Length: 79
Image: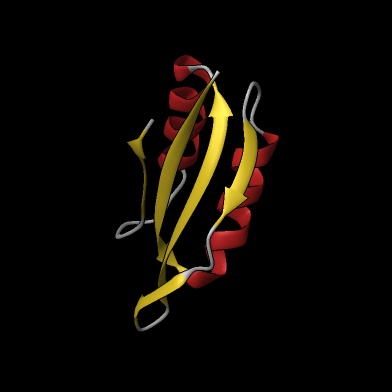
């Protein structure tokens, strides 16, 4: 399995929910999380590391991304 770094940027109120959704995704094991950094009014950047197959990580990120509001994003930064 590979470790992937995943970045969420969006409303601070969603950061914990996004991390939880990643941790709960099939085939994904959340291995670490950095402290969120503040971007601007109410928005944060959260970098987490997760282990899993490329397909499982991609499916989790796509699923979470589909439910995010405009102006928020989640993406695999590296793996």
